Image 1: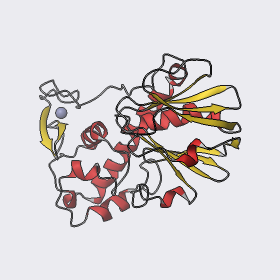
Image 2: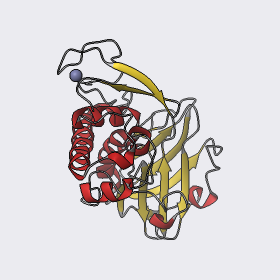
Image 3: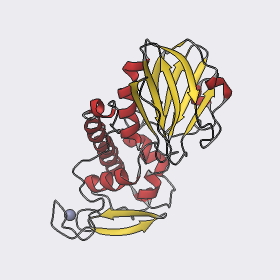
Length: 270
Ligand SMILES: [Zn+2]
């Protein structure tokens, strides 16, 4: 599933191909994505792209009359391709650009979405109520500490809650807690301000590393055969059950929390 770093990598990859160019037309081959692609998107003609931004895992393409809101779902990818390249089976949406290129959306599982809004997209039902962006100043130790008061939930699933902070997926939650030295089993309310400080720093670091890595694959994924850069970084604990901790050598442990696998070092994390 594309996580926040992959979505940000996609945004950075497509933005220069969209901003300052026009959308000439949109062709939808398969409208039945997670929700039907609205006709307002299909009817777009000669619309200059104002900007391409991101909120949580949603891409927002700003046009003069509204915004296209895109989510990649479980298996969605977006590439910029020469327009003459024929579409394949799962290529559901093509956006023809004035540059002569095409922005192509591919999604075998069709859990992604393309929606349209003429309001401020931040108030859209999918985006309203989301917690702060992890890489902004709003995601601070003080904020996290305030949010955690009275929360009995174990810290790992709590950190993955979009209302607390967006974009901390399963891998990033385990990795951030390891770097912060905090056991994933701790109740959120037990975190001290100092621990919240360590945790916010770790989350930002892990996500930045991942985005920087994704950034190096941008040219790749813009090629016809390319795919979005998949996050590969030196994982400290994730998917390493039974292997020695890279810091202390103790075997990494695995447990299930809220139906998701958690990996941690029982010696380094308290
Ligand atoms: Zn360890």
